[in-house]
Image 1 (cartoon, rainbow, N blue to C red):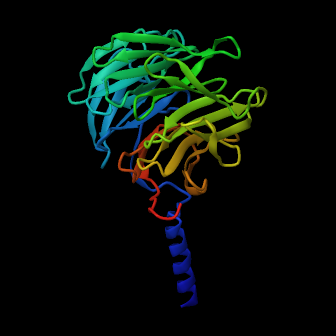
Image 2 (image 1 turned 90 degrees about the vertical axis):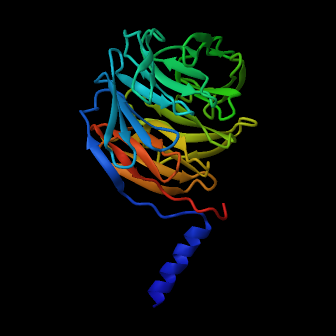
Image 3 (image 1 turned 30 degrees about the vertical axis):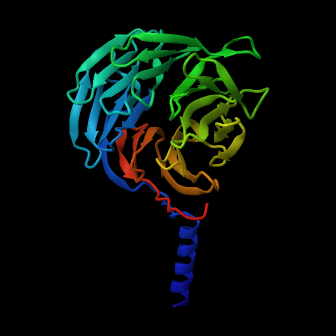
Length: 357
């Protein structure tokens, strides 16, 4: 009886703090084994209505759309120059953008219609060495993209994919344009976040004006591999991966969250400085931040979830093979993933109970 009471007391304590205890291993809803993805990028995205999940990798020219509920294959988007580094659904659910290509492959951007799998506009020569990041504006009218080794980003009009602007990522302190790793539109469409090899930058969406530079390691670099705004627009997250150039060991590998209002550092989320190439996302209610990553010490990796307010880990889903990418369901109860071993699927995400934060 005493054990039961103590267990109940502990559970109530976690509930009041807004936390549900996580598991050490993923709880899969469904999985499928795709081809090996250990030598190139792979990507996954949820549709805005949570009904679909799309996957792709650089080893094949087909992006697949699955039922998020049970993993049944619904549609394949096949075509030349569709070996996807990154994919994204438009917020209205009508289109899917695929950023494709590798060094020397310049036909690197495609727009597909989700309803029937037709490539609306394809093989756009966006970046000489391939496209690695795409993000739709909240009204689905614009698409921002960045490329391998490119020090500029491009903005396209949807759905005709006419080029609206090419913006150099100028660093006024260094006096040159800095290479970009990731871009993202803010939830209100006013800003574009740019993660580059030096820092995290906030630019005005209408003209690319640099509004703020965020770097906790200045004057040294804060190599930002991924960026994400919280859905409530209050925070901007950077997936940072700074490694030793000789042994490729993490020197500063973490998720760093900044306030959009003034650029101040809000919190740092990590796993003991053992997470390389992190991809990240917030839960729909902005209460949880999550990242998929590889370990720098072995082939393993994890998807990890933190309470945004407290910084405490809610769930750690580790696997013996790293995760290339993951995507939060817009419902907030599941996530999709793409493993380095080619395993894809949907797994349970932690619940966040509204309460004291």
